[in-house]
Image (cartoon, rainbow, N blue to C red):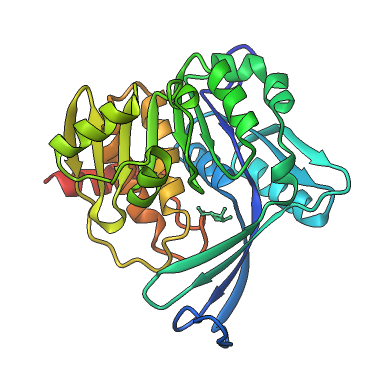
Length: 308
Ligand code: RIB
């Protein structure tokens, strides 16, 4: 990033150390199972989205909080190694860096528990302190593993496209939704955020969007089935290429990071979603949220194959 131009993308969000076990099947309540492997990776929805966009070639700055522990030093170094600007990733005295306890089964399904730690201390003041770069970015991205006040501050400051991935989901007020340019949700999140059932047909989507006063575009991710894009009053289906998934952790984050990458390069939303679906599919090919996040040439190759 050059100091004159600032980052193309600013991500406001969480960073975790992911503690990942693989198991034959996810345990039931009261059950103890033996893991077949254990690994530690950098994770957190915000950090994953920042890394996805940086790996695709964008200048990315991150606004977040780490603890004053060894995990904080490690995740900061991991982000910096990916080329993400970590000048606004602040250490938090007396706090632990966020941790995510991730279980992945043989079908690549996962379940995740997040201990937010320092992520829960990200404030509106932290975001306001990064105002010049948030204001000037082509795309600003946020999720909900950090306090809503910080997200609200980012939404108010953003002059570029504000991409909001409200995960983990909670019901959102019309004021915040009114500031969103592109809402990216899975079907469950759509229902929680809007209070409307997730629809896969244009007529139902039109009703849901009208009832909730969503002013911007909506992208509904469908996992291995791809995504739906609601834009300018029309619903488009974007199928995903078929891949042999090993771990779907971070696939949604790769989708958001790749969508931000394409939007920052000036692509239209539907094309950006086609790009993001290919990037997300590739990201599932190895264990860990960021390990298989692709570079631009890999996405371009898969996209060309999918289009042919
Ligand atoms: O979206 C995947 C991420 O969710 C993981 O990396 C984990 O840290 C949790 O935040």
